[in-house]
Amino acid sequence: MRNFHKLCKVLTGLQNQAFKVNSKMFHFLKDNMHILADAGLMMPSFLARVNADKVYELLREELTSDKEKKGKENINTSDSNVSK
Image (cartoon, rainbow, N blue to C red; front, side, top):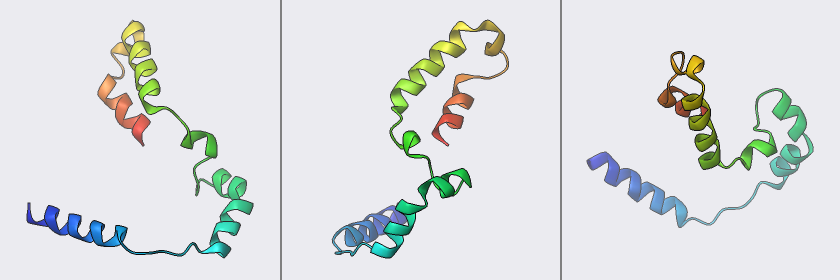
């Protein structure tokens, strides 16, 4: 419990700090986004807009409706795979 309070204190302190955007890094990431995503170093932008609740709902429907998959994979395993 003590570490939790330490962590909260540190996070609160960080949130209060002003920050400056590294414009060179930002432009590098922006210009090379497709290359970095293809290499697996950056998430493709379409994945950043995935509605996780909808994905879980569709996945649960699929797993519960498909009796063949039901025995191979359970909902908890699928949920953890989606959240990765």
